[in-house]
Structure formats: C-alpha cells, structure tokens
Length: 146
Image (cartoon, rainbow, N blue to C red; front, side):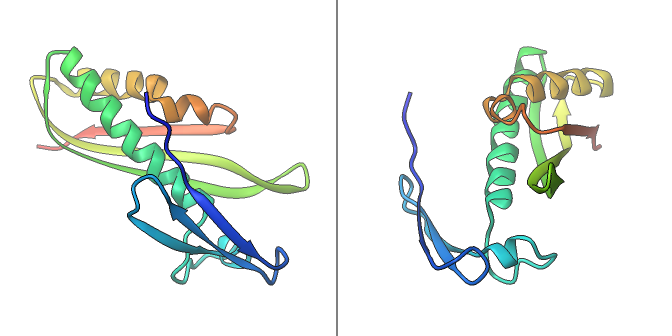
C-alpha cells in the first residue's frame, strides 16, 4: 500500500505565526494555516488540522460505506457524507472533542435498517475512524433519501 505525504512550513510563534500546508503526494494545492484562525469560528480563507481530518474522515467513510453496502447486497447510487470535527478544550489544552458523521444516501437493494447496519460497519471499519479512536465521541447519523 502507498504512503501519502503532506508538508507544512511554519514561521513565527503560535499566536502570531502562520504556515502553509502542502498536499505533497497529490500536488493538488497548498493551503494557509494559522492558530488564531484555527481557534476562531470563521476560517477566513485558511484551513486547519480539523478541516483536513474532516476531509480525510468523510472521504474514507464514503469508500468504506460503499463497500459495506455492496457486501450487504445493495448498490449505492449516491452518498453524501459530512464530517464535523470539533476543537475544544480538555486537560487544559486544545483537543478534538467530537466528530459527527452525517450520511444521506440513495441506495438500491437496502432498506433503512440495512443502510444503518452498513453505515455502522463502515464507521467501525474505516481506517481513518480507527486512527481517530482516541476522540472522545464519534457520532453517526445515517438515513436513506428517496
């Protein structure tokens, strides 16, 4: 299996500094990061580790769910996954306190219960979910759309 690489160049202190994270393997872009914007409600044109984790988790979950639906005898027509990653405080410092996965899907061959089962299996089996096992709470809201 391949190894993927990202690189960050940082200048300055935590509060006044900033950096750029580069998606090196794919070469799809370089993105600005800063701690004050990371901790603010508005991202204001910068990304954050939490947003990058949300992207990784939602895309991994989509792949895992597509696989689980197929194993259950269904055919995914469309899946829309959102991962909300919350940065909070724990033990006096910043901590990822919660990840909320939301999936809405159009699937042939599965009912709501079968879809929920596939979604729970995907949540448990997704490699990114496993890597994030230290997060206090990972929730899942899965529903079929007609």
